[in-house]
Every structure is written in structure tokens, then in C-alpha cells.
Amino acid sequence: MAIDGGLLSGLGVVAAVVEAGNFIGAARVLGLTQSGVSRAVARLEQRVGLRLFDRTSRAVTLTDEGRRFYEEVAPLLAGIEDATAAVAGARTVVRGRLRVNVDAAFGHYVLSPHLGTFLARHPELELELVVRDRIGDLVAEGLDVAVRFGDPEPSGLIRLRLAYYRVVTCASPDYVARHGLPQHPSDLLHAAHECIRIREPFTGRFFEWEFQRGEEVLPVDVGGRLVVNDAGSLIGALLGGHGIGQPFEFAVRELLDAGRLVQLLPDWSDEHYPVHVYHRSREHPAAKVRAFLDFLQTLA
Image 1 (spheres, rainbow, N blue to C red):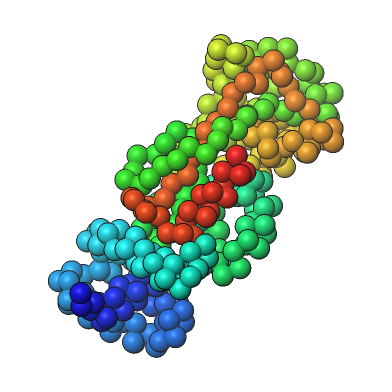
Image 2 (cartoon, rainbow, N blue to C red):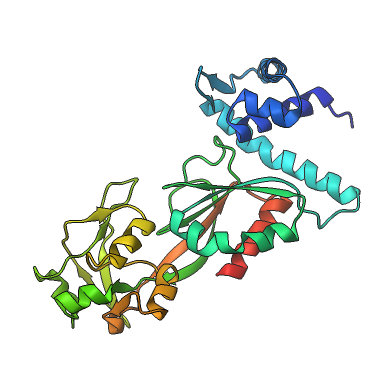
């Protein structure tokens, strides 16, 4: 079977442009000139009869047709890399560049502390962690994996539920000394209490406060003068004694153990929030993606 080397080369250039986000970065990775990358893309566009990229002076992005085209060929390119490694006697070698889109709280408190272990296990792998508020378009942005909290987002991506993480209600000892301990979730509606709310960056809605005791679920429409949109700001405000918040337990476990924060309403702390992993390969994800998915399972 004859293989068109020019076609494969062009596909590789397109993949490099998608991952780098521009022609300059792709040229650096491939060891070509920027004009050489541009010509290679133009030849492939002429070959397939599609305009693959929208080009401006500031950015290069996939067109709708280009995104669909790349979505089809990216797994094939990854399969060629894996097959080449296998023939070379390196079936277990994970190599190349892995780009992961991750929720800030999960990335900071769960994933990042363990990445040294993962990279030490795969010395030929380069990992780029991209902190984002939402999944976005993995294909168009050259991302391999996304990790997100909450209910599954509608998409054509492959989705795996990784784990459930507990939500805790807490405040600083200073806040408790000034305002007292709430005895029931409904006590948070009292004007004496300040609740720190989190606004979901993509929808603009506030995350709802729920309290769960066994099968009983009690939503509470709390109020407060401070609104944040990330876990770091929430925890900083809690430590400063401003009010009551609902962070993930993994983000404040050490602070609770050290007494810098106090858990409130522990009998109503059965609420857990799901985290999902998304990837774009429909059938056979690349070895680097499989390795990362296996690694995530060890953190659950």
C-alpha cells in the first residue's frame, strides 16, 4: 500500500499549528521557517479543497470545516505515533506533548502536587497544564484532555466520571467567635451571617448552596455582600474572617486539621460534587492520553 508522504507531512504541520496556536510556534517545534509552515498548510488546504484555518494578524484558529477535519485525523496521527513506537519495541513508552485543560481548584489542590510523579514515570513526555473556566473546544485549541467539576457538559467528547468530592461548610474561628455557630442550615438566612457566594464564570449564575443529611437535601438561598469566582479567593476570604463558605473538602482539609478553619453543620455535610474527565479520541486514545487517564484514577 502506497503512503503519500506529502499528505502525512502536511497533516503533521496542521497538528503542530493547532497545538502551538500559531505558525510561529509550529515552525519552532518543527524546525521550519514560518513561511515554510504557511506553505505546507496552503498545500494541504488545496489538496483537500478546504480552508482549514482563519488567519488574522493576532491569531490562527480552525474553521468549522477545519475543526471537523482535524477531529477526524488527530486520532489517526496519534495511532501512527503509537504504532511506530510499538514497532520500535517501545510499546510502553509515553512520549510527545500532552495538553490538559483543568479546573483551577482541581488543578491546584489535587493534580499539581502529584505531577512530578507522573512526569518522572514518563521522561519522554511534555505536559502543559491549561487552567480554564470551561472546556471550550478541545479540537480547535489542540487540547487532549479536560477535567471539570459539575454535571456533564453536552459535547461530542468521550466522558468518564472520575470521582465525587465532598463539599464542606466552614468559617474561621474568629468569625465563629463574633457571629456564633449556626445550628441548622436555615440559620444562615439570618442577617447576622455573611455567606461568601461563588459565581459560575461561564453562565454568570451563583452556585446553589445545598445541605445534605443522608437522603434529605435542603437548598438554602443564602445572601452575602462578597462574591468570588475561584477557590483561592474564597479560601482567602474565609481565612480573613469575612464569612461562611462552601469549598471542596480537599482544598481546606489541612486548614481544618490545623484549626485555621472550623467546619460548620457537620451533620449536613453529605453533599458530594462529581468531577468528569473528557477526551476527544472516539476509539483508541493515544498512549499519552491513556497514561494520563490511568494516572487520574490513582488520584480519585
